[in-house]
Length: 324
Image 1 (cartoon, helix red, strand yellow):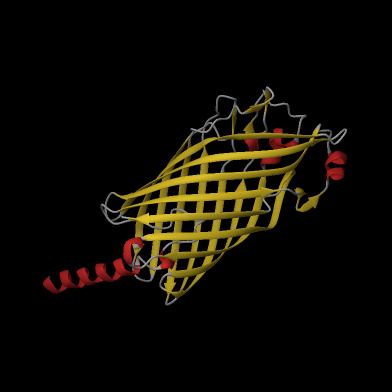
Image 2: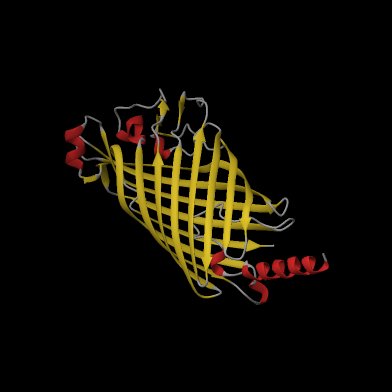
């Protein structure tokens, strides 16, 4: 028994040392990939910027004339920028169970032109998004393999009644979904010397209708990545992500569906595939030990959508994390 206890102590010390390595955290765009031991915690701040300035429909890029020929909407979306500031916290309730919370602040800017005369208009929204509270369960945690399960709840904090000039803005400009939702996920990461390989499945299931009599479609995501760590403090990653959004159920009756395709629920059935390159830097010594900085850039590589909309052509994420 004494030898077993000594062995477990040595194993814990070794694993604690490994936890400071850069590749022990997934690329910054992936969340819910790790747990914390009992009593330990982590805080994080992320900034994400997404630019959308190209029209798409089906699996092809389109132009404004295609938009006019295909429908009789009065406004054409031409550009949208979305910024999100996310604050997160994690706390180890036990050595197996970690509690995680994430809250975002969203800022949207959209430009449109009138189909009839090309006159341009702008609108913007900003405020808190929906809150996510998750429980992470450590299924497997060893030197060379980590498997984490996730279950949680989305709370409808974000506004769904954003307007411009007394006109209800389209669904992409709203700050939340207005309904509760359930998060489910599973992440596995394999470590082989200076390399790591990860995969993650996540689903958000929205339930009930909101105060405007609609419900956002369920969301499904798949991530796969490979990471190389030239030194303990730096890892470089390549990641691919597929996001699938189901169609909105119901409809906001205050929205004028003839204004734009962004006001029509048909647009909401969509799939995006994005490729990312990223870097993690973990401070190993001194006062900054335990701090991490990370960045990731993503480019859309393929898509399939049910109606005209703006493509999430590229995005950039910058993050900071600190473990205690």
